[in-house]
Length: 238
Image 1: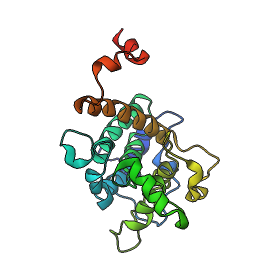
Image 2: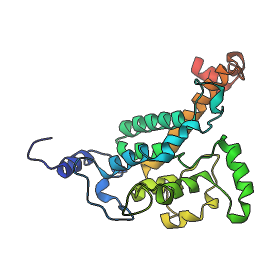
Image 3: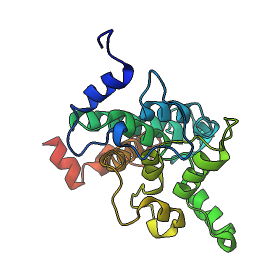
Image 4: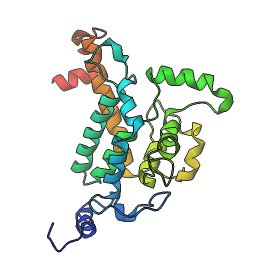
């Protein structure tokens, strides 16, 4: 960056090199509460930092991916899973000339509303709360960043950009049911989320498919001999 350039000018020049389908911070729908722009970070970098410093992010350390925390320090937790998703998301975004900062921010927050004890814990909470609208972790994630985190005197929540919040409420994997999220009505439900949010969904699947196999092997729940019978395993071997 040349000395004569402002941070905003430097950012615009960098984003001009992104692919046409990438999301730029200059076209962001912004935040619920207007804030002065940061002099050094893009809006999506600022979102990333707010997520990392949030209470809910730290609590992912003790939330189950597949194995509960006390079974050993080898197995993945929601926190280590999230870090793997963020790393894969950045790699995909860079390879495809998408916005790495936006992809990373969505990835770091994508499981922030998860319960202890994985999807079984979510199912139990959903049953207990069925008379109050049920429970769904993506809805809870959005609620966490919009209401439950209280870190600023001017507003509740983290005041993240629209694009990050949309990436949370529209996050969709085989475990997710978009129809169970009334909050999605505020985020153009007929439209797909940003390209970066879609990359995070792919990164999520890549991460858990691979690390669940790794954890399963370590726990002796599956074996290399069993895996060798799978067609995809044989394809990779060859």
